[in-house]
Length: 165
Image 1 (tube, rainbow, N blue to C red):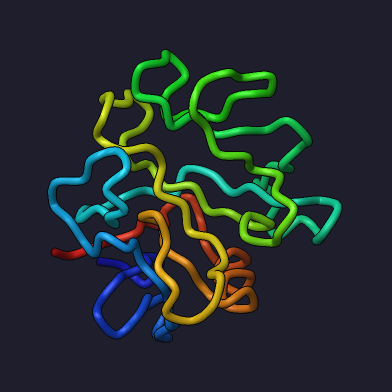
Image 2 (cartoon, rainbow, N blue to C red):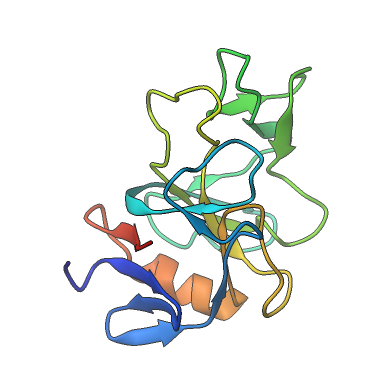
């Protein structure tokens, strides 16, 4: 473990000597993640991307990519685009990244089941803002908006998310 790592524990998400309260998946933490189970997967996951809404916030880091109208994330294990960003129109199961609410205004993309996605193992685990304290996610990690922005401004290409079982 290094100071650049994000470490999930029962006490929250630890980063650079601070603990941040967070929400996890409604399915708890699982060593056997499956698509749709709502679990946050155990493991060491690289942070492989950062997405943000340029119409709602300034670019949080020089490597952050804007979320454009029509940007989607495929969660259809039966399609070749599974667990990748795709563009509308896309008739397969997906999540809309450019949402009406602020949930995905800033998203850290982990390397869960990526780049060679195994169908059914679960699509991407994001770190994004929470709906409210204690409200579970679909498997992602949710943070208070100001905490998410603080972390996003400090992470690097060495940053990993460590989730223990």
